[in-house]
Structures are given as structure tokens and as C-alpha cells.
Length: 210
Length: 300
Image (cartoon, rainbow over all chains, first blue to last red; front, side, top):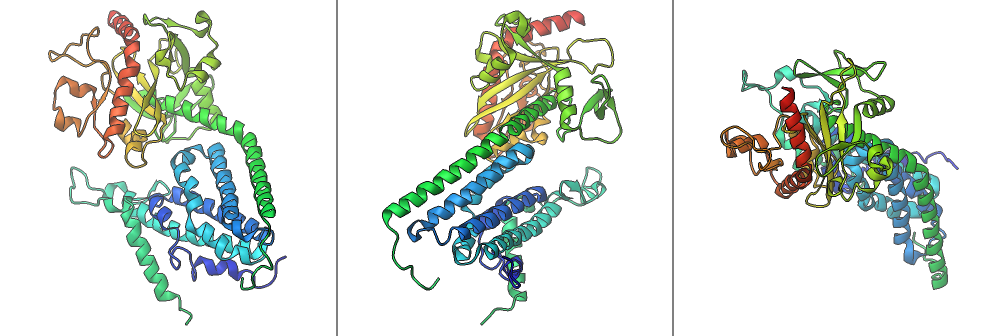
């Protein structure tokens, strides 16, 4: 099934046509769940799994799906994979599940998933569709991880919950003018600024086709 | 796609497609649900046990065992014979060790309305069934109420309980909240608390699950002190109050400050829910707590 030249479906999505930076999709969740890297990583993997699998199945059914019900078909397929992820996390990563269950359920409404199903998967063969979905998920994940790393580093002084900024640098009763965590980074608006800057960088580096 | 489909499929075709799709999706999900039921239940039970041990401060908020040494909690690890031995750097226990300590240190017991302790055998109640079936309703509404005896670290022969855990039920802003409250043998001082099931707003009401907020509870008194510094256990208001604002600023050194907790900005209704949960649940336990207090005073 693999042909030469399919790989660009995956690689394009990661930077040059990144869904978050170029299409500005999936912003809601990028704001909500990026204040910790561990949460951002789980979300990235979940979305990658959901987009790639649902794109694959949407593509597999593309000749059989009646056009009048294609949206609801895509939605049904997407929801199945979202529930699979949610149940799986609940069984094996309970602590993460307790924090994430709300957001995992909302992957169904993540525009990227349906965007790729509707925009790509229903027009191409299953294997390219799978790669395209995976690329979209990974591209989304990349943005999430960058934003998450910046927010966790400046907001908590940590990465993956491990203290990076030495505790001795922090302001205390003795040194009131020393380092303090940047409170804004913990709250969602910080993600707005960071994503805005990432979009700027991506606009500046990716050459536009005429 | 640019070319239009030859002709629109008939309604029958569309409907049968959707029915087949729904059937397949339902089948996949029900198989998944039945396969994952067991690991999910174990995960849930493990979480409940961990939360109870955190309330009893056998487990630290980040999940390693701890023991009390000279009024400070230090990391510990599990040795043979259910013993916890202090170590330097924290080590994270696995599932088996967690269940081992939970089963050997926290013993479920029943409390009658008169405040007497009874075992499940004496009351003729099946423990598993009782615990599972009354979780939603709240054990405090029953003639036999649930309490967990906290046994000391089995380093010596002494088996006097070092505290009791009371399951707490209440209503937050969105849904029911479930937690634990651990009380010292004097029936008054709080050892710790935890919430294991809640659906409060993340970032606002859900702060009740955060260790930082929960760390205010140890040392608080469930019986409100009288202004003269004594406590009338018969009539004193029983509970812990989540106030608006900071306790130190609002209450100063009033006796009520010892039974009050800082509110969470933006989560007043969750705070009120927590307050009434403690009030409602602790009320029927008053005779039990008074008996503990009496026995404690006599032993002193």
C-alpha cells in the first residue's frame, strides 16, 4: 500500500502546514491544557491517536459513505476513538485521567480532527489519510509541547514536574528581591501570547505559495 | 472531489448504512468496556486507598510512604511485616505495596448512633456489600456508620489506633463530592483530609483536591472552642468551616479560627459545599467523637 512520496503527507503537517499555526485550529485545547508538560504530552498523544485512526477509517469508508450523512459518520468514528482513549486512560493512568477526562472528552470537538477527516481523509486512500492524520496530531502536539514547556518553565520553574530553576534562587523572607515565578504563565492567556508568537515565527519562516 | 456522485443513494441505503455503523461502533465500545472494567475498578480502588492514606498521612501528597519522627513526617519505605522504615530520599511504592499497607493499617469498623465501635462481624453486616452500596447515600445516614481505624506502624506490639478516618459525602457546585477526614485519637484534632471524587471547576473549585490547600487542615479542631479556651463537647458547633477570604485576616485569633479554613477565590459555592459536608457528616458521629475524647482524657 505504501508508495514513494506518501511521507510528505506526514511531514507537511508538522511545520509548513501545521494545523494550529497555519490553519489556527484546535486553539481552545491549546490554551486549556498547556500549563503542564505531562498533561500536554498526554493530550498530544491522545489527539494523534484519534486523528490518525479516525482519518484511516473515514478514508476506508469513503466510497461507501452516503454524502448526506458523511459528517455524522465522521463524528461517530471520531467519538469511538475518543471513548477508547478515555477508557484506556481511566484503566491504566488513573491520576492523569482524573485531571484530563473533561478535555479528552472534548477531543471530539477539536476542529483539527474533523478538519482532517473532511478536508483530506475523505478524498484520499487510507494509508495517506492515516499519515496525514498522524502528522496533524504530531504538529498539534509539537505546538502543545513548546507552549507547555515555556509555560511550565516560567510559571512553575519546572519541566515535567521536576524542579529546574534552583530553589535557592527563589525570593524568600531573607532575599525578597530574588526570582519569582511568572504568575501569568500559569493562566490560559499566556498561551495566547505564546501561540501568537509561534504563528509569527511560522509566517516568517514558511514561504507562501503564490 | 470534483466529480459529483452518479446519483444520490436511496434513503433505505443511507439508513441501513447508519444502522450498521452504529451497531459496529456500539459493539466495539461494549467489548472495550467489558475488557477494561477490571483494570478500571482496580485503578479506582487504588486511588481511593491512596487518598485515604493521604488523609491519614501514611502517604505523602505526592505518593510516597511517610512516617512520623519527632513531629515531622519523613519518607519511608515498606519492609517485611507491613513495617514502614524511614529512608532519606523518597521512593515511590508500587501498587502491591500500596494495597499491602492500606489493608494492614486501615481497618474498617462500624459506629453505632451511641458512639460505640463494632466490627462488621458483630453487627452481622457484609463489609464489601455495605461499603459498595452505601457510598452514594453516605454512611453517616445509616444506623451503623463507617469509620476506618488507623493502626500505628507495626514496629512495636502497641496496637492502639493513632486515629480514625471518616468518609465524607457532600455536594459541591456541580455534583457530589467524596472525601476522607482523618481525626486524631482525641476526637478533635484533624490529621488530614482528602477528596477522591469530585467534578468541580478545574482551577477554581477543584483546588480542594490540591495538596497546598489541603495542608491547612492538619491541626484544626472539629469542635469549636469556647472563648475561654475550653471546649464543651456536648454543645460546641461541630465541623470545619471554609470561610470567605483568609482565616488569619478575617478571624485573627478568635477561637473559631482553629476550626476555619481559607476560602478559595472564585469558588465560594464549592467552599460552602465542603463546609456543609463536614457539618452534616460529623453531626451523627458526635457521640463517637465525645467517647474518644473522654477516653483520651482519662488516659492522659
